[in-house]
Length: 139
Image (cartoon, rainbow, N blue to C red):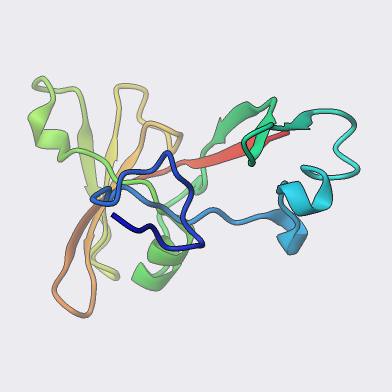
């Protein structure tokens, strides 16, 4: 089987688990830039191609109150969540915005934090459950 030139060898041809990665300044480690020149030795060029980098993951809440529009929620949140009703009884309490139709499910603490789940339906009828979280990988 022939692989596309822009596809790395360790990803299966049938893999559908790709997700967008936003790089600050659109500069990312690759062998042509010595795996991220200026990253202070956090990446190394691999003999068979590609880069191996030291990383840390940081997570933070995106909203500290109800999003003002569906578009705001959809543009800022990208990590899906389970339907809060699948959790134990009283695990989440719901707050519904009559203005936007967005439901916010708060965990036991009742605050807007990284455990909050938003439920909404977009203009195309697609239904979403989204975590109130931004996950950032730093090198």
